[in-house]
Length: 506
Length: 98
Image 1 (cartoon, chains in turn purple, orange):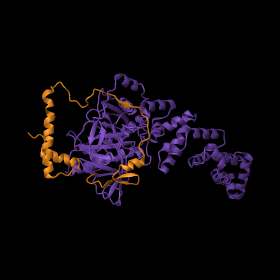
Image 2 (image 1 turned 90 degrees about the horizontal axis):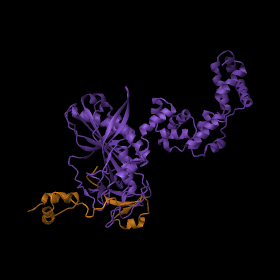
Image 3 (image 1 turned 30 degrees about the horizontal axis):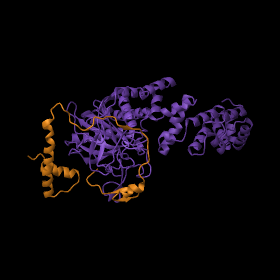
Image 4 (image 1 turned 180 degrees about the vertical axis):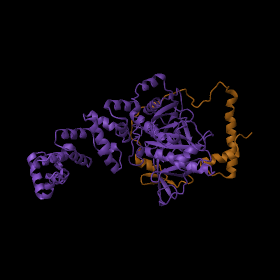
């Protein structure tokens, strides 16, 4: 890719001249069994146009009915975000002409969202230690997801130059919850981190509620990032709205890029255009999409086919009773329980390993070992394969079994890695892999001594050096023994045996 | 008195992607004005203390259990599609967007 033509100002200089204001609009696809307004399956994927019916295809005469579970999930989300729950609200039609909705409107909520006025506290790491920010929530409202378009013809697979498009309506009508923040001001240079921390915390909260699998890579959690800049003390500037921000890291990068880009525009006397921009994972840049100079004209009006939703106080209180422990409280509890440092806890959180480690410890594995496996070896493998840690086919039970084998001396750490390699490659469970690969510590002294004697005979010069006091030369012999035993000996034990054999002090 | 202007009709036609001739635009402008005037008579009898009605029956909380059921057979879905390719609805190229 050629060098970017987009002017940017250095981040530090941009922050010296301007104050950023953020707004985050997050969409969460609920994990309900059926769609928002009909009984079609809401499962991810499926063959194209197999999860569709007259309602979600917008056929004449079909009538929508609200999914009770989607309402409950939304109320629980609102409560967990410290929102007030409306005692009465309606759905609205958002009219637009685009083939991702066959009805030519999307059922949404307009001026009567189900949940309003909440907040979410997030923590960002700074040079002066952790700092807490309160992100205020404007509204949480319900709508339906849209169909999936594939652009065909042309040569780019993109909408420009496409000859026509193909539409799969499986996703159309899946319950979608939109969470909108109030403008986030005063974060300054921490703005990119605050944005990322907010989406992370929101995701963990939704996951704890069990309302969605909140996978950014699969689109069940999607984020639009709004950024504007203004000189300190002046009214807010024009904002850009960046879409396609599909990972937590991208949230941070998109905010940072927009601050740098807009600062360059403003400081050279230009003006920021109100527009939709697209984030590109590969370059870390945003590019211009649709201009929003002309306000959209969605002609919202109350959805006549759906009656108002009026949650009773009793119902809301009952749902409040089902709220789980808040993730930040849970993190503090686990950290105290495991007695680990802030840094160790941060490592676990950053590795997305908290749930996995907790479950591993619940299987009887020592906390240090559980943390070591998940944040070390498994994180490395997951990164290599480019998949989330949770997608590795390793379970807490596997780790518990391997740790048992290490404890009774049948596996070394090195062999254990090979066992997991086999488990991840789909060769079976721990015992099957141990057996199939013949992974057992060669622990019997006479076998090891025989291998040591052979290695010394092969390398008499090394044997002399060791006996002459150069203990560090022992590595060559240990290495030869490890090779002879196909790596299945405990290297430390070989070294001890070797030195004993030669009568040298380690 | 015309409540609906020619410009409003043109704007609505554009939003609905309808192409209207000048005669049609004039025709719909008159018709829509007449409709709006007729409906407006409601406000002559509705006092300020009567809220706008969006639903004729005072009913709330009509829900359905979250249970998935099979939808239509794809052959039936396809039968209703003006154009179809690769198990998907085929639509004309989309201009002027993103």
